[in-house]
Amino acid sequence: MSTHSRPTGPSASVVPATWKVPEVFRKRLGSEHGRQRMMDAEEHLLLILHAPPAADDEERQGRLFWLDPQGAWHSTERGAGLASLQSHVTEFGEKINQLDDREEAATHAEQYFEVLNDLAPVLRAARHLHQTLQDARQARPENRDLIDLRDQAYNIERNAELLYADANNSLQQCIARRAEEQADAAHKMAISAHRLNILAAIFFPIATLSALFGVNLRHTLEETSPPWPFIGLTAVGFTLGLVLLMFMLRPPGQR
Image 1 (cartoon, rainbow, N blue to C red):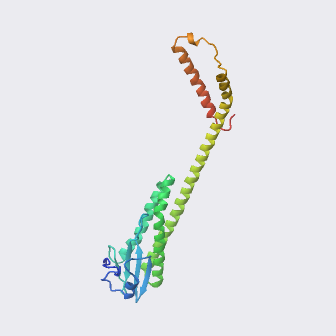
Image 2 (image 1 turned 60 degrees about the horizontal axis):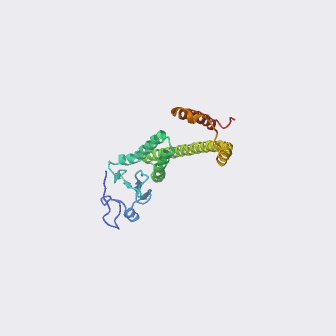
Image 3 (image 1 turned 90 degrees about the vertical axis):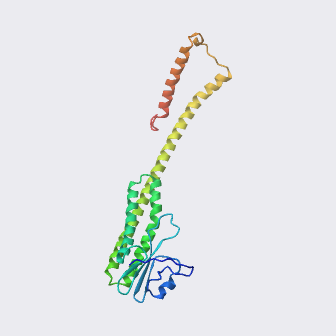
């Protein structure tokens, strides 16, 4: 069965008032759920678990699952009996599958970083879920349902660890590839700057001497029809620009 009640005061317990559990459970649980863990007293088993967290969750959403001495499960979540606990564990698996799909679709470092950022709290919660179910399984070694849930939680934790490793490796590859591209671009820019410096070293003295001594070669362009000198100079300048561009874009190994 599913029951849920909120604490009504600072000293109230998160354990529903309708649950007939040992008083030690209420004493050990205050108005907050705290970390994920298992409590065992007087043949009653209480699991304090957390819902799959999001990256921006400041507080964890606690969930309680109580196994009474008759073997019936009770939950503060929607659902009846054991199905509610099974749904809780399955929810973690679905969350990991969603993040796995995002990791496969990622192509940029920012996308891998977002996957890691969202996966980290889920991985921590999955580890604690597995440990809590392992403790419960040891407390109730004859309970087959706890064995199955423990094994399912282990697989979820393992898948989360593998996904985190894959996403982190992909992120590092993206960063290394980007660094290599930036280094290659910087190298090409350095070569281009070097070639420009060579051209400046050749033509700067000529331009300086021409300016100092007022060099002005005589030609007949002043007497030519106005459009043609401009068109000719434009064509020559365009041609020289293409030659200069080819010189600048040559591969570094060519001379």
